[in-house]
Image (cartoon, rainbow, N blue to C red; front, side):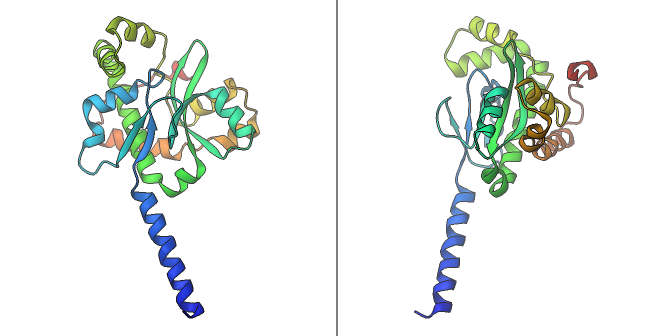
Length: 213
């Protein structure tokens, strides 16, 4: 085989591997720290026409998009892990919980990541409008009594999930300095997700300005 043919074969193999990676399901972490997942699955938004393939995994399992405390995200980035914080899931007595994704996944699979974030934003708004139903859905998904789910949810604040200000606020509370905040944040996917949700459902919950202070 000539050198040119070898190069062509290598490029074809590389393209095939990249295509297979792009088509593989996006692994997204679910659990009580992110009740959004239970709502997304209950409402079957992940099975709508054109939805990207998603695999829901539990805490501790390998995932492309995962929920961690903001301080953990800061520590992981400080240790050299190339990750980005793309969404504020909630705030509780211990601080902020955020969605993180590796830079590679964000670069190679930005479209499905943005769709996953759009589901989370859609779920956040639905939960604010339907707190009682949210407890029932989360309880059913986690296999726990509804009152236990309601108690866990009562300690979480969902108004803080906004692009830009809330991400910076969460990371600063997690111990990041201004430089690290700039390195960790990528709020472009979140802004794209909000645009998707607001284009599809323009009349949704408005977030009080005070909630970002």
